[in-house]
Image 1: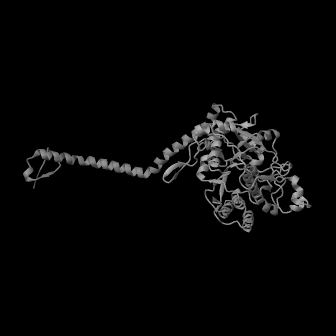
Image 2: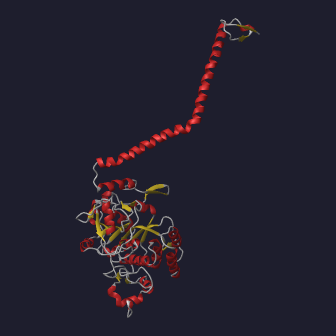
Image 3: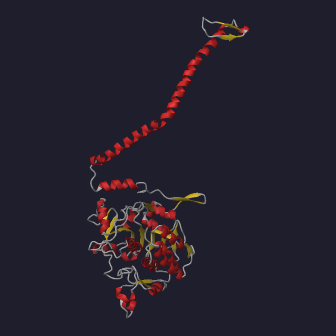
Length: 480
């Protein structure tokens, strides 16, 4: 091997003897060698950058996050000014705030569906709009079951109820029975479940001094209702949601009635919902109840929920909607789909989570909906009466959810609701516990439609409870 110098450069380049005269090739090799220092510089620069990133990565992440927080804080600070600039009235401001909280469900009309046999179907098969416009209420028919008439026990029946004894002698044990409910004894309770041609039963409104006072003007309006959709909010618990999805025919033939007390009226006025001079808010006729009979607001709510036939004596059909929900279907269409089509007198939603009353009792205690002692008293009585642990009665699921109740006001369905109400008063106010017992004990109620949970979800937009109901206050200002 030999070596040579190129242009006096101190770089030594080795070549073979065979290639020593090929200067062109030597030049190529020289250029490649001169690139190496630059490559090393770039590699060093990249390494320096990587080391700096590894050292300061937390700071680099923090700076954009801090900037975003400052931007959001400045945006929040500007929001009251936007409301003020738009000159929202005191009445509009609460509605603006409420709509922001509930707009995910409010006013939704999209159908709820489920997959059956590999095919997606609507949960509620309601008639198309063109047929709903011509839907009419069918003519009344004579009851075909055993119960033809229901007589409601009142204070005027006192000689029959207690014989020669006084009322105080008959009612010595602590209970929630009062002058609104009457003081039903266990013997009267047992006889009330006997299905006779004429049924005699306690069913609220026992005495004129029992409470749940309605003005003459409101009562006159309620007497005109043939089909009614009703709800209630006592103690300021929930807001009022306007019904949607109805046909023009239903608007002409259906009453929408919401029962409030004075606490709810005051709460709603603060929200900007004031009752008009015609007693309406939107489609809802607001009926103010005075002198509520129970200190438990949940129990007060059972009166319009279960005793609609007493409140609307001329009505043939009713649809109950819990205050936490927005009714979103045509009422006449719902009656056709859930009652008329299946020849049912009562339609109610199945319970989505449980089927047994005993399983429900455990859940009630676990969720602190009632005390263990209250629930045990109720279950002890039901076991003594022979209530089985079956999950189905009369071919129907035993447990109901009961936030939506659709029914025809027949003697038999009216009797069922009276019996159910009495159980709720006697034991806990959790009506899911007493429904299976009442259904099992009144064995003649066969034509009932227990619809699935997805049908209930199609009937209403669920908003959830907005606030807790406030306790009742006596005339002396003390809590009761």
